[in-house]
Image (cartoon, rainbow, N blue to C red; front, top):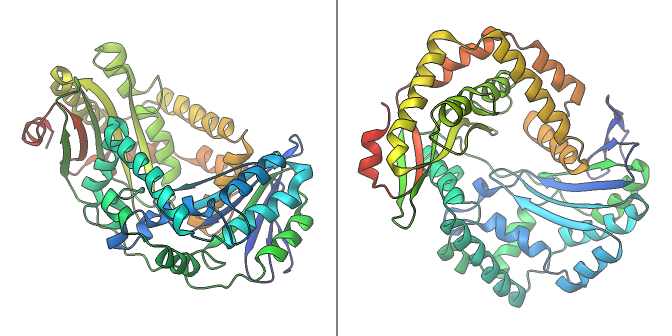
Length: 427
C-alpha cells in the first residue's frame, strides 16, 4: 500500500499497491459508511452497434458471480444491513453500498467481489434484458424522460453523448454474454476505477480489505473519447396527440466542468431559473400564470456542457411562453442581474450544496466526480470559497457568452408537429 496523503476537511487519499486510488472522508456524526466504486465509463463509451452496453453491464453485476447467485447477493447484503445500488450516466458508472460502520469489512468484500467477478450468466442476461426493455419503454412513454433524451440528441447529434443511456430495444436484443464479459474486463479496472468511502470509515482497515479483494485487478488505459461538437441549433420532436401539454427543453452550449466559470454559472443558473425567486419562475409562473413549473439547469461534462430551460405548458400557451423566455434573455443581456439578485442566488446556491451534502451518499458522489473531472479532490471549503470569490461582472457576462448565438437545440414532446415548433422558436 502506498503512502497516504492527507487533505483538508477530513479527506484522505491512499494509493493501493495496484495503483487504485482510495479516497475517504470522515464524518464523525454518522454511524454508517457509503462506499462507492466509480468508473470513468459511461454511455458515451458504448460501441455504436450496442448502445446501452454500459447500462446493461451495470445491471448484470448484481446478477451473480461464479459463486453467488443474484438471490445470494440480495440476501447477503440485507443480512448485513446494507443497501446496494448502482447507476450509469453519460460518463460514469458507479456501484455503491450504504451500511452500518461495524459491517465495513463484510460489505466491502461483498461489493468488491460482485464488481470484480460478474458471471454474465446467459439465463440471467435474458431475464435482465426483459427488465431493461421495460425501463426503456417506460422512459419512451414518459414525456419528461423523453424530452431530455430528445434534447441530448438534438444537442449532440450523432455523437455518443446523444445516445440514450439505457440503449434501444434493438441494441439490447443483440447483447451476448461472451461479448459483455470481454468488454467488462477491458473497461472496469484500476485504469478507470476509483474507490470512495464517506462516513464512520476506518481507512486502514478498508484499504487492507480492498487490497485483498481487488489487489489482482490489472491497469489498462481508459477508452479514448472523441470530443463532441454540439449543434448550434436544431429540434427533435415527438408528436403526441394524446397529450394536452407540450414538454419542452431549450439548450445552448456552455463549457466543460473543469472550466472555472462553472462557479459563476452555478450562481447564474440559480438567479435565471433555478429557484422560486428566479426570473423565469417569477415571470412565467407568478406574473403571467403560464406554467405550473419552469426551471433552468446546467449539465457540464468532461469536454462539453450546456445550459437549458425546461417547462411544460398547454399547447395554446406555448407561443407566449417562448416569447417570455426570449424577452427575459434580452432583458438580461441589456440590464444584467442586480446585486440583490446575485446575492440571493449565491446564498441559495451555497445552501443547495450544503443541504445535499448532509447525505453521505451525495458526499461520496461529489468526491468521485471531483476526482474524475478535475483530477483532484476539491474540499468543500474550497468549493464554497470559489463561489464567494465570483465577481458580479463574471456572472452577468455569461448572458452574452452563452446566449449571443441565435437559436436553441430543442427537445419536445406533445401535441405539436416539428414544423409548427420550428416556426415558434426564436432565431
